[in-house]
Length: 101
Image (cartoon, rainbow, N blue to C red; front, side):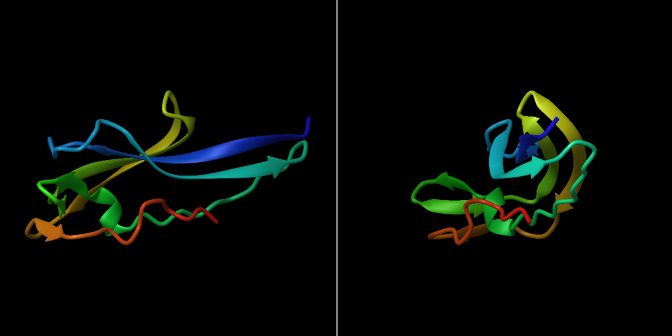
């Protein structure tokens, strides 16, 4: 049966960073025909790890989990990555959502 799916990209902190437990970082609607599959590519930018506190955006080093699914309760793929180095502060973010191709 022909249908559509909305692919959603989520980010979760693992090491206790002051972020919400799960955050939507990108999405894309794709249409599929019966038996058809499609590969997608998403890029998560460092700015998207930032949280707002005391009039600045902050990025903390630590471990994060990336999740792909149809919704926040229907996660189908996940992976972990680490950010190393010093914490970073900035006045504004450049990226809010990831582009999914």
